[in-house]
Length: 111
Length: 113
Image 1: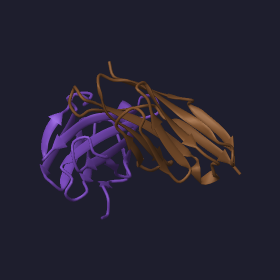
Image 2: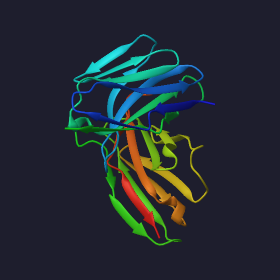
Image 3: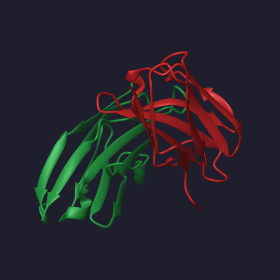
């Protein structure tokens, strides 16, 4: 069964304290792995798509990496405005076009 | 582009009533998705359409739930009759292509009393 597990559930950082969020996945052939950011009361906002192991993408203080079993979202020198829930999702090559989301990591960055 | 538009943004209803949620996808997007988000189960795919045709409705929880897409710019998700356990945030998303990025609307927060 296709599955996505994110850790930790919650992460509290001081401003400037770099860290990483983990997304472990089990899928029968990965079509793509997605990272989204979700602010309270809003819909998920797209950040990155990764398609193959070894791929990396960056945007401002965020960098996403992908291996055959997991993905990391690295946050460098975070700011309070980076506080949000970060969601990871996968699409498999089989079973149609279903997207499976992880439960998310709630990030709190304190000034 | 205005992005994905959903209405209403908030809905409070009583158990047994019919609820209709509405979605306008981004113009030109061929895929439309309906999701439900709860604290317990996270974000779950309910159903998705391609070119207005339902492709996979395996995530629809019960026969009380139904979804339609009469044209490329409008979709509805209906719950009849509603129950308290249906309380959740319902999101609509659209994408340009299969496997492409999904863009989410702001969601409809549903409370069934």
